[in-house]
Length: 155
Image (tube, rainbow, N blue to C red; front, side):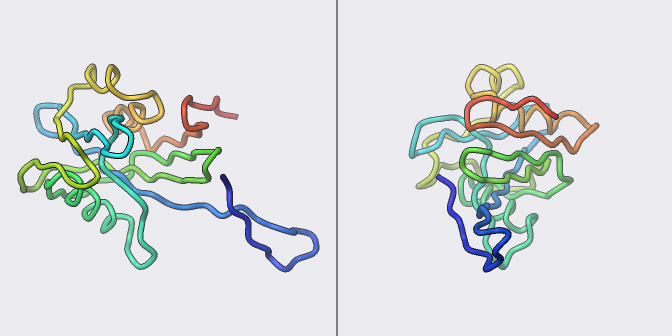
């Protein structure tokens, strides 16, 4: 569901509101990537969540990855921007390196695992798997849209 806010302009009666989320594509030296199984729906995804109003994207990645996995990270670079056109969510994904901590679950995760690219493709829907796979590609950042289930062709 999209929420709308009046702009007060007669030409633009309402504009869609978007939320911004951040996620960490945490890459170990052995090529495995950090993933969580979400507590609310049981799906495998990369750790992340809604960016708070007063924090930078990099600080949001640090906070979200630590909260959901117990892993501290060093943020490397932005690897992708992903828009869910159905829900109005724009996700910023950053490649990260593990910098300490110990894997643990949280209220938001029921499992934490270091997955190979093949395991990512097997366990995750394409709209989440592509975020981790894009982080392995040093040609980014990638910009992609999806409807919550499948990627939308680029225009």
